[in-house]
Amino acid sequence: MKIELAESLGFCFGVKRAIKIAEESKDAHTYGPLIHNSLENERLRKDFNVGLVENIEDLKSHSKVIIRTHGIEKKNLARLHEKDMEVIDATCPYVTKPQQIVEDMSKEGYDIVIFGDEEHPEIKGVKSYSTGNVYVALESSKLDNIALKERVAIIAQTTRREEEYETLVSYLMRRVREVRVFNTICNATFENQDAANELSMRADVMVVIGGKNSSNTKQLFRICEQNCKSSYLIESSAELEPKWFESKTFCGISAGASTPDWVISEIIEKIENLKVKK
Image (tube, rainbow, N blue to C red):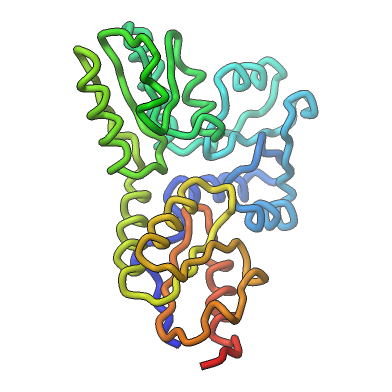
């Protein structure tokens, strides 16, 4: 079987940076998962003694705490400093940017609209920087009954699809007098999505690798599924099923921005060694 990797896949700049920071910060804890990949987080725990804490109260004063790539809520960052923690910031710069935009635009009196998933840690953090009205929506219908101000600033979750963002922007332009639009979608997201789209149009089976709770990985899977019905989202090689590859000749592989190379390599090796019915 022919196996081809998407031209752009795997670790993005922000994740590479966060992993390097964590490896250099032995005997530390991350406040929340550093990245959305449990296998890589476990490697950091085993090899570098980088633990995971979900509750600030579980952290002892003067200990080392790493801020995850998605960032955290502003009030929680303040609490960490109040407890005299050694705060090591691994927030992706592409996430820091929308945090600053939200803070600045809300201070100027704009209502803030965030195109994203309200339950995603990145959005929870970004939203917390607003000093005024802030609304989170994935579809325009969620804003239909909201009395927006005449001036609105809109940003996007870094891992969303550009086409869907444009739809919400167009909706706002028809509703209010002034719309300030900020392109906060990460370049790596564009590149990975474009590469996955191109490859999935040619492959007869697609394997998308990444965390099941990773927004950008789920976006890649949706794109591949539109072009190739035999598309599968997995986190590890243990999830591979030989039947997926029966009568298939061309396997395409894409991977989310939090997927390490060693996981991708393991999965490729297992696919190559699968005993599949022709």
